[in-house]
Length: 514
Image 1 (tube, rainbow, N blue to C red):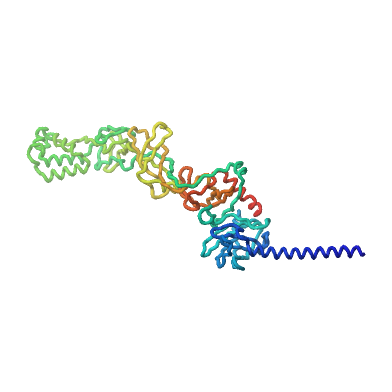
Image 2: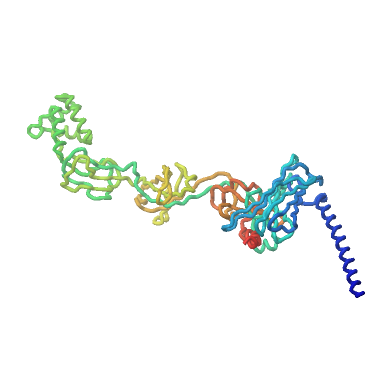
């Protein structure tokens, strides 16, 4: 019994000693927490921050964040406006979660915020400080499975340093990788700089006729075909060449009316050529018997597309031309021929269709994202797999103001010389357009990661640290993208190994969240 009380007395004495030591430690810790030593914490802009979580290991439910803010000399910063946001990014079907709370100054330079965590995992903390002495932003991370608060990045001090990761970008934090690991995963970097960007557009094209130079032969009178000269489709013709000869009673009557007005005696088959020359006005003989009637009859023949040379030949012959030659109005090839010898035709009927093959049109199908780089007048190169040794050059003359509803492309017209006839209508070709974008801030294509609707690059912060950055990109030119926002000239980005860096950055976070 005496031995029992001896052991009990010893246990009681040890317990009292432990309580006294713990109490002293607690008071000492509280004192240290309220008075951060000079130079402690991370330098963020003009401030030094020391962030603690209460409890030390965050828990699901209520938590308290303690932010100690001092200037570079160690003096507490009072009266600052502090904003804090605790968030977990969306994953799969799980939406983004946020926790906000009112930040109040509990003591000189110490600011507190109460917040709640709805689930276990890693949470990002974004802090923004506004004070007459300056502005600072910092990013931290806490985990329900780890003690303490981890610093990720912040506003660099005045005069240099790495740029801060802007708040609210919704990307994962920085990760530190030692040199051996970087070499093993093949990390390569490249500085961001201003480049003279240009892009090449390749489009599928189809050769067709020049619509503005296509013609049709449609007589303004009725008649019959006497003799046909151009007798098959595809035959090349020259302007002024005889296509066929036609007999038309009404045309013969109009010629007779004109000859009568000239005073030519049509009795006995119209008289001799010598007589008609003396009777024809302008040939050195007497004036027409009825000048007004002669002028009206001549105008009627001209409107029926009887040429002046044919009218002169008829007047010299002194008799109507029964088989009137019908001439080609333009040079080209015959696309359609709708008559044969002896065919009857009516006024306005299309007998021939003629189109030129020099130059030709090439209609290229260009996708909407490439249209901003296409301009009228720009040079286009025409390539054909059937003519590998021959590349034609043309000019863009027109861009459709709408898209084809079936292909979702816009048609771009290129006028191409074709003196040799190498480009055949309905032939498929490749159209290459070169466009200059100008001098732009550019990031390599290999540096860009696609995360949902965001574009992310990893920025080299130095000392083996890499931080993700959301960027807004513009036009793609070769192996580079135009940078609209998110990066500045002189920053260094990862161009190789960024997938492995991203995996290493998010592996533990993803495992905890799921």
